[in-house]
Length: 304
Image 1 (cartoon, rainbow, N blue to C red):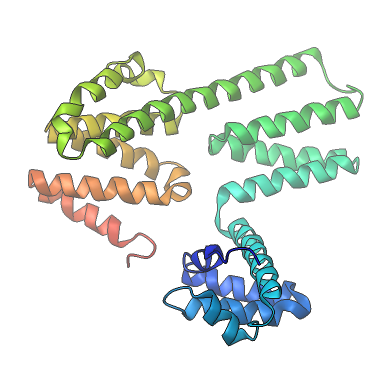
Image 2: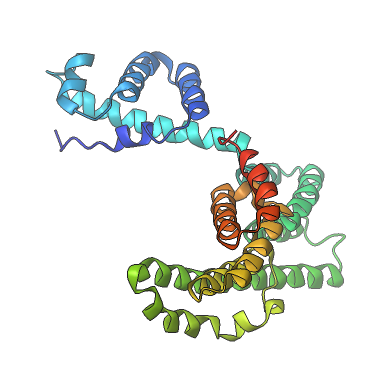
């Protein structure tokens, strides 16, 4: 038997209470006759404070069947990933959107053109609202396939030009977001490497902040790009001890996330930004801003 890894144990212990409940139900409903063995291993690992392969095999009766135990572990790991994928379809808007796009491709393969077009039109509005350039490109690819399958009937030259314009717009939005994501990552890398040497790191940050993208907010054409813009400026201002300016940029980050789909899509990012906002409010003794911020914090899932 290969070396006994603790990957399955680690996965089990990252699950939230609701995810564990869903995984248990999934195993019961989808694992067939093997479900009982999956559940026994799942429940045992869930209750163990640390992973010990030999003790687990002995407890479940696999001491003399280590290869069977290895197969069971691998199968359970895959089952849990499948369960978490299904769970995400109910809880994550991005996954719901991708599922909808796949459903459109299924309808298209079956030549159900009218049904496909109807769903694609609804999904196109969703991808626009979510600024999902990737989702838009997938839909546009399906749209061209649909047009060609219909042998370009009822499709004008203007329609084809609009299709190309939509593709170009989606690609530009993806590139713009990626550019600011990259520059923001550089700022975070410098920040994480700084430690006690934060003052010495300021020239490196300043070199990035002085790029054209950070001198003109209008160059950030998507909500995500503008979030990266303000987040990076907020970090730089903080290290320059310009707390008022840092607070202003953090406020912009929160407002942008609260007014968009990103509030739910990047919940951990919102929580981090809110924590930093509250800490800065405390440092500046802006208690009039601190109280509403604390109320927002208490309203976040898992913090009530």
